[in-house]
Length: 250
Ligand SMILES: NC(=O)c1ccc[n+]([C@@H]2O[C@H](COP(=O)([O-])OP(=O)(O)OC[C@H]3O[C@@H](n4cnc5c(N)ncnc54)[C@H](O)[C@@H]3O)[C@@H](O)[C@H]2O)c1
Image: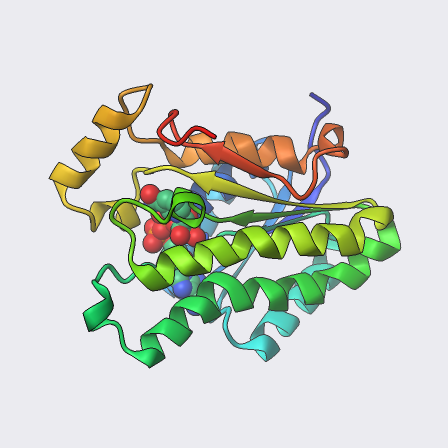
């Protein structure tokens, strides 16, 4: 596969977990990365780790991706510093695990704001620069729950991840002629803080049901991102790539 070297990426929710794994792997392939997260201290530690391990440029900003003005300011800063942007990974997400009876309207709105609306803010902010360059790779992290409703997922979470799939299929059509692809990745259960909130018994059920007899790792998702971000993936768009150890097959 052609090198990703020289590309520039934004990855949201990259202080820890999958976002960190994606940022670290892209940087190890020669990509300058701009990362953001709510967790300032962890984010800065992650940024230092990426700089130390890869030598790439890293911009790290603590911000809430549901605030459009902060997203616009961040994208502007990244474009000024990097000169251009090739890759956007909308990764940040939240998953308050609870049954419908315990979900209040405010929490429903917050889940959709983080998991869906913030991606709209980021896409809107990066598209002018990508259109100008006639190149762009937008990758949104959905979930197996967005396809099948999930096994342990909360209602608002599953619904928001389903919305991500329609989001990429729609946006892909609006930007494809400008050399920009828009895809989703639907991970199965991945070892991060988020899956750590699920009971060990439920995680074991996932493992038993998988073909690989394992949970996934952030690196498994990072490898999928790096393919979708590559020039070779120019004919892959409006697609949902499942990375799930074979738990959900369709
Ligand atoms: N872990 C899994 O099993 C799994 C499975 C399928 C999909 N996913 C999805 O993968 C993505 C990454 O999840 P993860 O497992 O690494 O979770 P995680 O909780 O470890 O990391 C998510 C990160 O997003 C950040 N974040 C949350 N809200 C934010 C906001 N408003 N502004 C900025 N940053 C914010 C958090 O601070 C955190 O660092 C999420 O979209 C999640 O829904 C996870």
